[in-house]
Image (cartoon, rainbow over all chains, first blue to last red; front, side):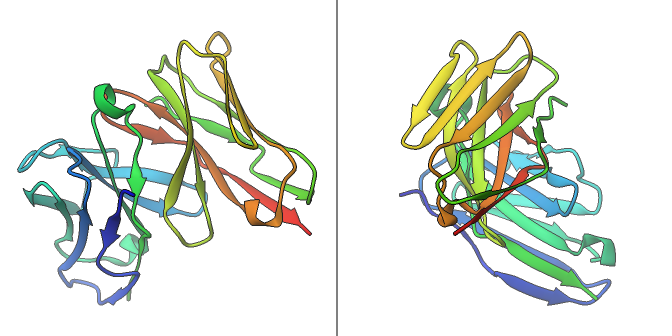
Length: 115
Length: 109
């Protein structure tokens, strides 16, 4: 079974803190994704990566950055956390469309509260 | 972006009944997928239907796709309380998926 592991289920941070959300997948997938999920807004793509050290902006990249130094690990960074970044963050991985239909496998999510 | 939109937003049924959820999207797609999310958890892939397919089955799930109307439906037959969850359609571009806002299904015993 594909396993995508997010380092924390719940996280509470203060405004202005630098926050790291970590995600690890064990299926040698090339693509990795970070989403945020908010009530009434659904899932919105923040960033994705299709290879080590490669990244692409999604729909809402402002206020976030990412790092992918190894194939299995994709980190989301909030440089200076703000209250409007309080949300559920979901990590996912997939093979490219040609190899697997772009089926995404998700972690359990990190619920981040910024106070 | 080619966003899917689910309808209805919420659906409440009794165990044993069938549940039907619909999804509409705006542009051409490679495939369309349905995912399920239990409360407070990550999404789980249910089924994928390619753009050249019209219908697909998986256990109690039946998905249809009408590319001329840019719409899809997910039917869950003989619903169980354990089917209570949110269901999302997702349209596939080359590397990314675009998710709708979901249908919240409540199945009462």
